Length: 150
Image 1 (cartoon, rainbow, N blue to C red):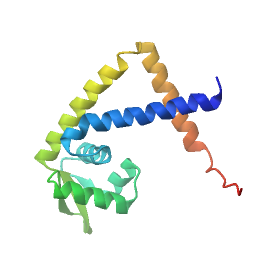
Image 2 (image 1 turned 90 degrees about the vertical axis):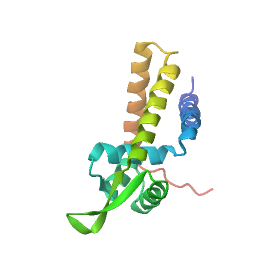
Image 3 (image 1 turned 180 degrees about the horizontal axis):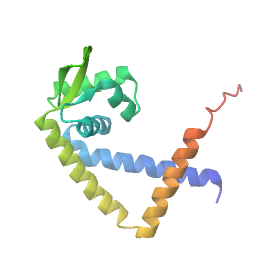
C-alpha cells in the first residue's frame, strides 16, 4: 500500500468522523469549537477563566476566541465577568444552560464513540489511538512545507 493511500484514508476518516459528530450535535445549536471552549472553561474553574488560555486550548488566536465567546454570550451559554485580579481582563464563565449543553454533548459523544468503535476490537482501538497520536506528534514536529514555484 502506498504511503499516500494510508494518509488519504486517515484524512478521509477524520473528515467523515468530524461531519458525523457535527451532525450528531446539530440539535444542540452549538458547534464543535464552541463546545471545546465551553468544556475548557468548565474544566478550568467554576469561576471561569480568561480568554487567552481558552484560545490556546482550542488552538485558535485571541481574536477568533473573542468572537466565539461573543457568540456563546449572545446565546446565553457563557457570561463575561470582570477578572478580580486584572482589571483589563474579563473572565468567561459557563452558565447553567451552557452546563446543560456540555453535558448533552458529552452524552452524544459517548454514545457516538461506543457505536463507531464497536466495529473494532479493544486491541484495534488501542492501535488506532496510538497510531493517531504518533501521527500527530510527527506532524507537529515537521517543518512547514516550503513553497515550490511552478
